[in-house]
Image (cartoon, rainbow, N blue to C red; front, side, top):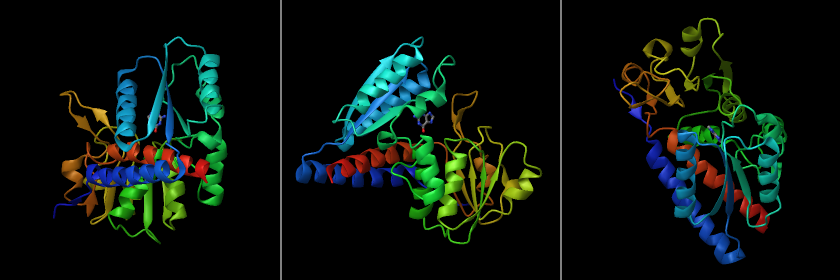
Length: 285
Ligand code: GUN
């Protein structure tokens, strides 16, 4: 039987309209308009396009946004100084440094310089530690936050479920594991060196794939009826977008599955807006 498709675009649209209502209320009742400060370094076309989409989404939700665009050869000090200017700017409640940064810049040092009180992505080690130790943090990384909302809004049972996460990145795999643990899943975090990866994946009621290998996960990785969340996105030779999951094969076995595109992708932006509004609400209270 073919799997039910989890419509990330529709769920993201619902969240964006909730966010817009929260923005209207903040402006009306507190005179506070949420503000996002974006820093883009260099001319990576994918990064440029993501930043443009984020700014457009802000405008649609009534969120103020500002961009600092530095050249590809900008110094690390210049990036950190742009972060400092946003940190001191009261109309900016959340700061986003688009990744990846050029190779000559130490990404960890830059992310450390974003104040945790304004870290739209939730990448600062203080926030990472809060999420693991307290189960929550003022900012939750946007893509993992989006994965959790997809599961919750699709009525996927979480308590006691076996969750397998493939991919151990700081941006997706680790925070997804942390969030699912908080929701009382039994979590296994796998990676490229995991032994018998298909066998481990087949134990999952919830399988989250974020390994960056197009179409790697086929039906042989999936327990019949499992929920499959595909975080991967790459461009195939014919120019189409493909995920880490072989959708045609996997959707024959899964119970619920996200497509690529229109799955996790739209959620990342929706949760960035939510993080920004939450920060403004904290500033207003
Ligand atoms: N590049 C790829 N994913 C992300 C993300 O979630 N946040 C930022 N800032 N850059 C990214």
